[in-house]
Length: 488
Ligand code: F6P
Image: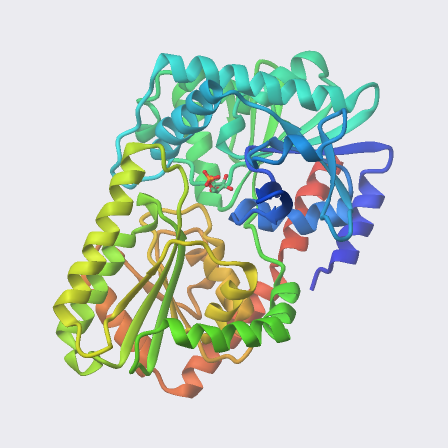
């Protein structure tokens, strides 16, 4: 099993003499005013939680958009602050965006054009020229911040995700010697889906400025290469998994992302988590025997409405579980200025209320919605307490909630019910119960199967899942990307 120390050694061996720079839209830590005090908050997202331990091991610089209202008051003259706050290990360099830029780049092109374009969830992308212009400008800002940090040194630059498709091109124009990798955290669609994008050639050219382009699974690598074949005059090599475009070669590789298995397992056993488990009981409407859990950002790709309908079907089809079953949905709110997201928040609320009204009896009701945001210990407490975790994404690059649930399941008592349309289903099919989230009826049966499964089978499945996730952890993922980079 790869450890943090192994990753540190790999980095020291391979990145000697090079600056290590990561850039992403989201920052790993934000500062917020609480009254007059300033609080440093660890941001909760698959990407930042996965990369934070990597940066702790690597040191280096992480460039990201500043999103906290006290961020400006906590940086030095270079817009930098050392993090994590308790034991600083790396530098966070913050980048400021105006409201207009935030609107065009983040809410606009990133999340209303590229996000729906990449996920097959039947939400139409919106391509606005104004959004695209601002998206390009913000990608230039990111590139400029990276170039500032490179200075006269040699550097490995690791860009993250669909917010930064053009940054590699701008960096390479100034510093062709910089080694640039990009990891795409979401699915890459098939060429038919991608061809509707008016800016497709520029996006592809931007990505093909990278030396290494990583996706979670081979299927997305193939989709990407097929897209390039379809759209550009480029040479794709399916043997080597590479593309040559305008005399520059990009390696295309699958790197399935993992979690800090050991860290999560240890933390799940902590005293803080045990106390959080005790507090949790008061939030669940009695009486109940079975606790089902989902944890997501409230996003149409996550299949939250489909999941609620499956819970409804389950209670209708198997009425013996009424007053015995509670479904707890943690829904973190994000992208709330986009109309589709606002509508979804309301629809989820309405549907949950409707189902609760239908089945409510005495103090008991079947669905608890928590949109207030919960801390890390409460997350782990829920993971440890839930008899089953339902991940019903309609389409997902990987889905790290599935892996976190397993890592926190130190008592081997939980069952993972997992959408077959997630990247993680490719790795976890042996232990999880796979579902088609569009099919409410079979999802209802899967919930029943998870509950009624004999204890030995549950333990055996969870053990398999844990072995898999322990081995393919976050340090191995980062180690593999860095070893591949070093070969360049
Ligand atoms: O990988 C998907 C992703 O967009 C990440 O880039 C991000 O960290 C996460 O989902 C959360 O999204 P947002 O920052 O838009 O809330």
